[in-house]
Image (cartoon, rainbow, N blue to C red; front, side, top):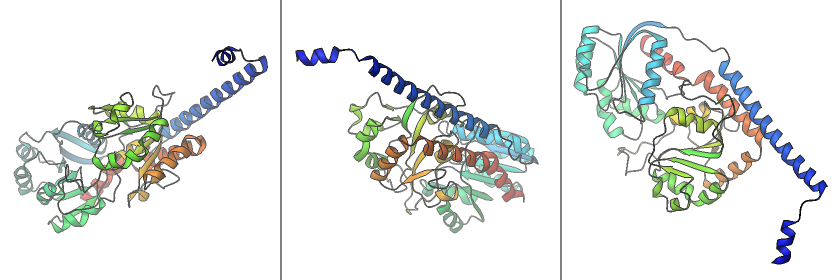
Length: 377
């Protein structure tokens, strides 16, 4: 023990000191260069000229979800975007006298988000007065037992799940369109200077049972690689007590804080919830899910590498291996985490291509312009 102690306290020789200092300096310079290059490229993409959609001469009455967080940021995104694409926009909450307001003001469109809190009798009264109505459904296919009763009361139904199109048509809906959510780039955007958040891997979301079961076999390894988790129910994890400083539970993170974490993480995981979880879903017909969740677009808008579980329609939005990375098993996820944490150039280029694709095709301006085109031509 004495000899070991003596050896531990012996100073490095001059050459070793210089070599260690040089390696540290080179690593620091490379990290600084990589970070600066990423932020500079991201800034150029964010500030590049964009397609400006025409503002239509429309009066839109928007009925918010009425559910508060986490729906309220979607309401904010849609309301802000409507103001850029329609000449007149009014906003109401579902417990107001929506039909009376619509009948007195005669908007060109009454658009409801989610619709769960809005009595369908109000929509029936609005339609009876010749006013167009539309609903944008937020949670397909997870609550189709309820939405199947709501959707037929609207002229136009927009769903973020491709597999729900035929379902709503068979329920009697005449005009059903696939319209996923998007990135609201006022909320979700890359940090353009060195981020205050420095994470290896992040996951933000609720601990649905399929996520618990998927991550458990590799959780220890991911934690060793720097995983941090934020969301509700993660105390379901048997290993939760071992990582109290790495798993934050019981908190809904706002979009600004979420975007900062995404932007400051080398890798962000996106593991979709299961459409077959009977403990939380109302989907007795057993509809499966093919479409990417809203988080897919929000992560990509923050210039970080996203690792997402495969969904059939994902490749229509981002090219796997070029703009996003995918996995189909815990072992594949772990292998790709290992790879991209040690291949900075590849990681960075995928992240930047995703950012560019998002700004080019997947903003709320793109989606609402498409909605208006479906309704008004």
